[in-house]
Image 1: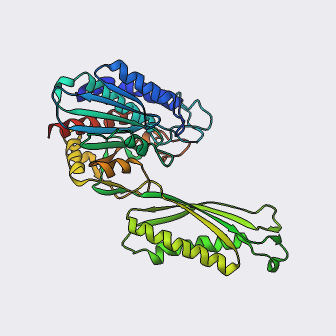
Image 2: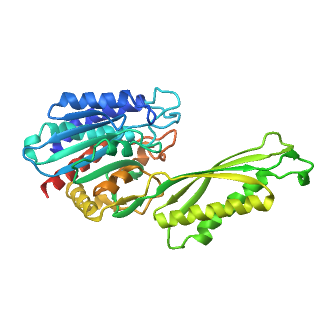
Image 3: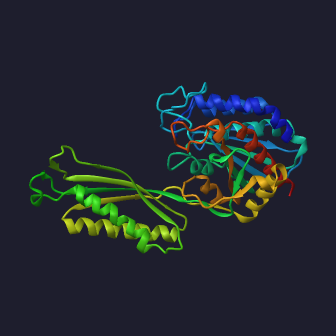
Length: 388
């Protein structure tokens, strides 16, 4: 069956480029899921569910005899970003582009669906193909799809993320924590504005914000166990107007990344203390909004080891890299909280072709050989799981 994917590679490229040229934002996907569902329905031997959890699509392919059920997941939403690549398949939607390889994920899984639909006599059990919407925007599409039954009866789930950070031809895996939880915080500071020449008559919200930003870093350096991993990053500050006016308000926004929920609790508790202390000392008031995002992605040991063995069989052990934990977030974590499984990476970078821009970059791209590489990996893992 793996050889049949090679024959389908040009078609997967065509599909990927179609999605790349016609990207859709999270929770606004209409044409993309419709395209996926129509493709699956035309294959035959695929039971298709549309509008799962809102905009998701699920394809069910049953083998010759009853058996276990394995799920494979791909996402398909895009980002609010202007595509700056000079390629024929450049995004045709202003301000929206696929900058995280979700177009490749969907195309690769559609290739897997094509092959499985033509070879139902060659395996027992069921393959559940989960095409998920809205991975990029919390609360994400995974929760709603799970609530709508996409995991009902599933014994294990696997997902693959194509990444430009690894060269094409390399698989990345890790047992245990792979990706961090991704939280968001917003701090609104209320001071007292005034003339820039009379700071003693004001409560400078910008100075309070600056002091607060520096002190937030002491939470990680002095409150979190140094053996644990955590990040607090301020990504946006809004304050001020005229150059000679002391601002009365400031807004500080950022993200917190952790693996352990106990560490997450420490940060939340101490963030409140730091913000209150900085504002009280300056005579300012504040509001703190803290939103927990996706939980950490924690791969299951047995399923990860099985997946690595499957990948080694088709590509050789030299193609496998054991990854370090990543601070990025992924709502695949919700699936792993419900059923055993593993989230893996497939290399999609190629420095010789200039394909080495990071994810969420306006010139992000993937080497399209990764579509074949990723699809072969997913198919091999699914078949090996069903045979085990």
